[in-house]
Length: 54
Image (cartoon, rainbow, N blue to C red):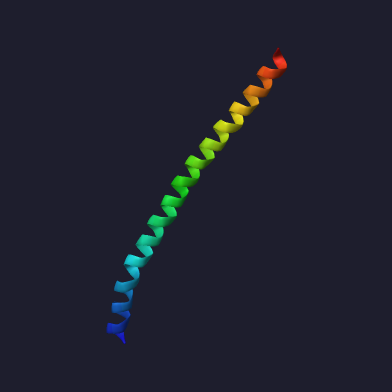
């Protein structure tokens, strides 16, 4: 039983490490998407202010 548990742990460790790497990549992508959306909103607000300032 102890040997089976060790084998299962050795098989699960790489899977969990890959899962953590995937989650990290998702957060990095999410940050960049958020930055792009914020820049787009600022550009639209600046455009609207420019239209009404004339």
